[in-house]
Image (cartoon, rainbow, N blue to C red):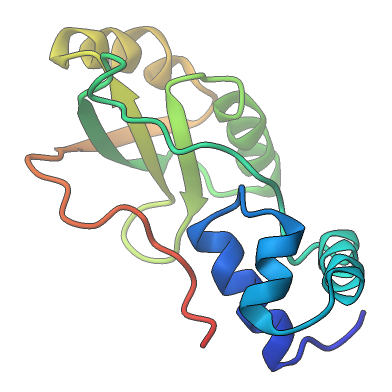
Length: 154
């Protein structure tokens, strides 16, 4: 894999802020020709530095105003149980992110719902039915302070 340089980092920073930027505009902002910029961008994509492009949607306008984090503790911490849980949680549409963590529980799950009733249904009909789930703790978010999180590449 190619080592990225300062110009690559500038490209990545700009893309984090505006993934819809044209190649011509990107080239102008970093001071390279459009051809050189296009080649760099193609390489960054090919090597996996950019994992995808998409739009950030407003969850409140779309009826998903309740953000909930859930700590999940499994009954056993064996590779088989981890694999079964991971495969099952990936199938749950309400789950935005799921991270295996070190500490007092096994997974931290980020979810979005219409309201607390929808969350309660998810908890009983989905989460508690997943393989190995022993215990959960729920943290309903009262206010989102920062959620745009670009990587600090500078």
